Structure formats: structure tokens, C-alpha cells
Length: 36
Image (cartoon, rainbow, N blue to C red; front, side, top):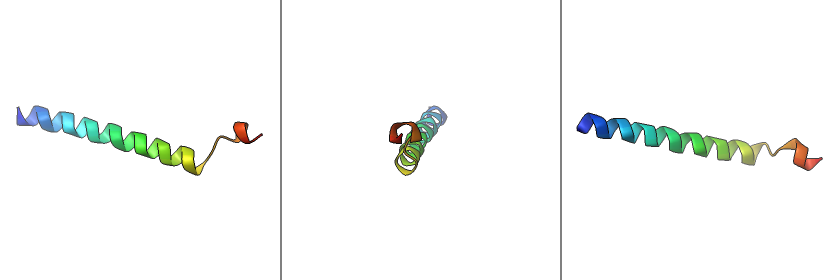
């Protein structure tokens, strides 16, 4: 069971990190199309 939990935890961490990176990217580089 511990292995299962660790696996799910790692997935959750990856998903959270991925979302954070996307948010940072969007904040840093706003879409040029909208600026036009």
C-alpha cells in the first residue's frame, strides 16, 4: 500500500508542478495575439 500511496503522491506533485509552471509561463509571457 505504501508504494501505491507514494506513486499517487508523485503524480499529484507532478501535476501541481506542471500547473504552476504553466501559470508562471502565462504570467511571464502574455499571449501576443491579445496584445495586438
